[in-house]
Image 1 (cartoon, rainbow, N blue to C red):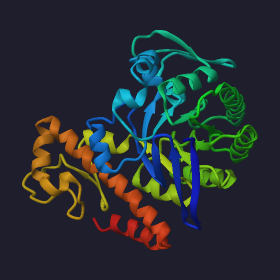
Image 2: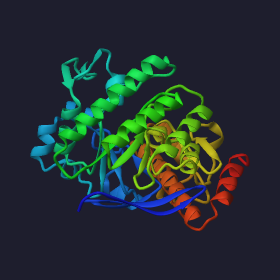
Image 3: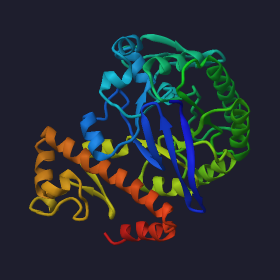
Image 4: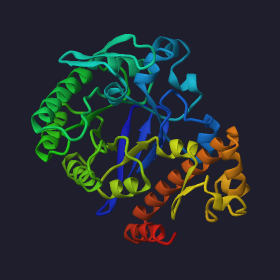
Length: 367
């Protein structure tokens, strides 16, 4: 079964669709938990299934360095290796190369860098990045791109767009398998460069399009402006993936601007620092005021954590550094994110997103 995207409904407030892959279907708009090393931190694949996760994100850069592509391929591919039966999207590693490595050199042929693990020298080309992701057996794979920091001069951003486009063309030419290949739109905060990037990628032709290079230091209003502008340039019959942005507000605002797919480490990372998401905003479970609180995190939540444990107990676990704390917190945070996306899809399908949007922000002022 090849990759397919079906647009089910389009409204002024967002889109409802369905992604079909060799490992199953997924409803959009969707949120993908991040499992960079082949594992969503603290959770098992069974946990993910019970939470209703439909797509997991893994990272080709991390898996390439450890345990190595050959190891994973010899053990039946990434699905078998990590015990996950659903769709997997792999990020190309471009962002990690540019953010984690102390040494990197961008060349027309590719990127030379030193591993953040042991300092070993590596060279990745657009062709090799596609080959790595195909060897891993991912359902959706990403082109190699150059992600720039903010602020950046226009001339530098233009050169980066041109390089990313050339790399995208080379990566597509190297594709051999059935995995869906997404091109990544760059251009920093310059609209004309975003348009140039989109036009270049459309000329090549991809199964989907990702919006990269945002939420790297610019003001949130500018981020959303770039998202809306870029989505307006992308074809309606292909999924749109906003990379690495994932506050609850980002999800809602992104959907309103035409985004179909999201990923972010935020819900799992915050779980490990004691920050819990609720409709009324974030709760810091470390606060002393919860030391005797018998209430669940969110009385309206039906996740396993909220159905069985009090704020006082969760605070005790976290301050005692009990491993159970990280699991329970992650279960809750991911349930919150996934339920938020289910609510978004229902609101769009039932033509009541405007009411949902108003209530979403109203509850955040009621805390």
